[in-house]
Length: 171
Picture 1 (tube, rainbow, N blue to C red):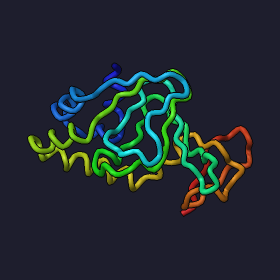
Picture 2: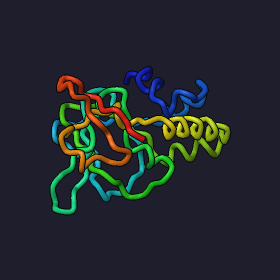
Picture 3: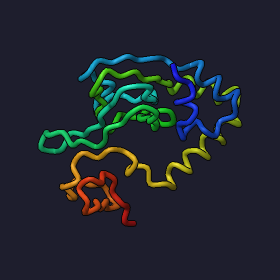
Picture 4: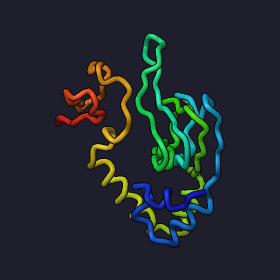
């Protein structure tokens, strides 16, 4: 497993080397074929996933039963991070769109580390605060730039150049 990809993930970039080593010792590898589900909307959340290789799509079911594609994520990105702190039901479905390798970190593994190394919680909170302060959604590949009604708030605006794929944020 490429530990350096994980080291650069924003959630763990602020961890000291020992805390990072303790967390990565707890990671489990998950290999998925194209179309395999990582988890489904409504499943109990219990772990965070890092994409080591491949791609994963995140989607939600709309009230009329159709899938709303939220994002397509690739190597170095993570998803399901709220399950580390709040193991509530998943708010989206995650599906592999290619052969994919993930590294999973369970909620219970993080809790065990925090019991023995409580100072790590301050490091993780710092990373979470930075993530909340920065608009991270535009870094993900959005699939439907022509349907602003489906966009979350704040409103995303797409460049007029059709070759440009990244929206700008209007706060």
